[in-house]
Length: 254
Image (cartoon, rainbow, N blue to C red; front, side, top):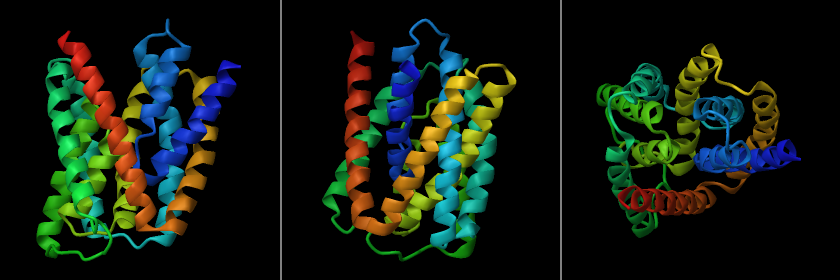
C-alpha cells in the first residue's frame, strides 16, 4: 500500500516538475514520511532516481516541440555538471541553515516580480549578444548547479526566472531549457548516490515509472496550454516554496 501511494504522489510530482519544476517538494516529504527510520541519504538517492527519469522524459518531449537556444544551454549544462558536484561537496563545511533565509528572500522577490509583471515571459524576445549569452549561460548553470547540488529546492523555478528575466525568453522556452539543465544536475547527484549504494531500488524504480507518466502528461499540457498556463503553475509552485521555506526558517529559529 505504501508503494502504491508513493507511486500516486510520484505521478503528481512528475506532472508539476515537467511544467515548472518542484517535484521534489512532493516526493521527498512523502519518502521521509513513509520511511521514517531510513537514512536520509538513501531517501535522497531514491528521490533522484525517480526525478531524473521524469525530467529526462519531459526534456525529450520539449526538445521535439520547442526550439532551444543551444548557444546558452550548452555552457549552462557544462557549468551545472561541474558545480552541482562541488555544491554536493560543500554540504560538509557550509551549514544549510545559513542559506535558507537567503533563498526565502529570493523566492519572495521572484514571486512578487512575476506577479507584478503580467506580461512576464509572454513573449520570446532574446536580448543578449551571442558572446554575452554564452558567458551568462555558463554563469547561470554554475550558480544554480552549485545550489542544486548543495540545497536543491526551487532550482527549476530559479532557472526559469533567470532565462526569462536575463535572456528575454518566453516561459515555455524557459521551462523547456530548465528541464534540460536539470537533467544535468540530477545526473550528477544520481550518479553519486547510486555509486555509494544510497538508493532503494525497488521504490526508486516504481516511483520513476510513475514520475515519467506524470511528466508525459505535464509536458503535454504545458505545450498545449502555452505560456499563460505555465505562468499560473509557476506562481503556484513559488507560493508553495515560500510557505515551505518560511516554515522551515521559523522552525530553525525556535
